[in-house]
Image (cartoon, rainbow, N blue to C red; front, side):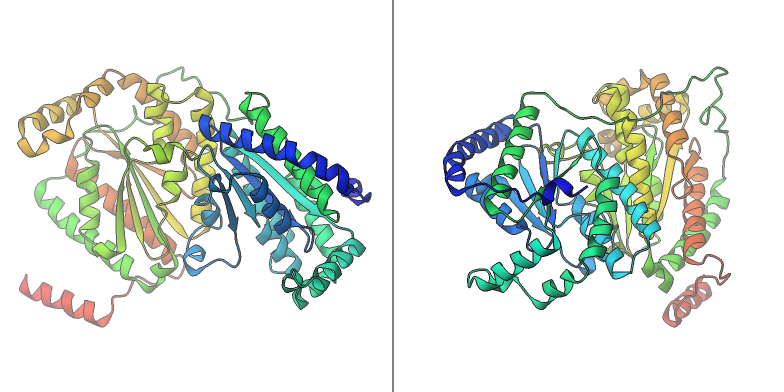
Length: 516
């Protein structure tokens, strides 16, 4: 895999001097066109061995291009904030918007390679991360990103020569430490690990460019030309890479589905509702204050028919918690900033840290619901979204998040009744819009989309709970009960020990009981 990068590639000084001015002008022109079109983000990963010229290459690109429209991201040991979220969270947030180029000095590859060499990550765990990375990069490419991955290679002796040369030069001596020399001793292990990772992630949509790193002029000129050619091809509309997205939508022959089989006649009378509400709100309050909850986060997703009661259900949940411990994220049409990023970006940024609760009023499922039905995205986009959503939720669960997803369903007749009631009540009129009425005309199309969504994205870690919401009382209790049961199953698990209140809470509870 590295043979072609061990041939002693070199560019003489005169050839380099003649080629650079033309290349710089062309890179600038491509960069400005990229920004003007505003349709393509460019993600450049700069990786390689110590001393192979990663920093020098980034610096030369800054010299050749307009630095105002470039970004460089460097990642070291995760911060406390980053450790409390999924592994990929810090990379999700750093992605460039459309029209910009971001260079990653160190990337999502650094951690698995380093950890495997250090013996803290097994081969199986590395392979699992590789699969995660391949899916992530496929998502970026399907979103329109140009992904270029450079690995600068050195032979063992070449690395030794580079480190000595850097150490000898007063301008670069600071870059060589004892750590770099110690790393040279693990050269063979690094090659073995890197070879495996690069081979498994060398995909058609995001291939690796392995380049010899010993000669500065060869490395810089080659990198610049590859970057220029790739941007030009994408700007011309050529070489747009896509990956397989999803299996076709299944055909329903007998008309039975997850929505048609719901019993919407369930009801709870007011007296029983008040008893059940107090019971499950009290249970939820205990669970989120249990010390074991500090190792987890909760992500509640609320989707449902218009006027199905999402807002009322959310209020019953938040009434049981301290306002400092949760955030409600209402989702509407994406902003200009959000449209310049991958679809999932605006949800990535709201992922809670451990010990916190995030409640999404509408969510990432908009792509497979309203965007699908209303034609706001292409069929390939909403088809691939199923896999991307499942991957996203899998990563959340792996990081300790408890994902609880609710679909609130009401009948078409009940929806019409609630629409008319909203029009009559002054403080509820804002809830009813022309769009709500238009959506009723596409009831059948939404019905099909909802069933597809449930079938494709109800997973073991993040199952859907379908809520019969014709009766608001019944729906609210089912939601609270489900949330408590899911949370308790995760934080208590097989210990069999119920959540315990601290002494001050016990005193408050006892006092309240006496008053009542």
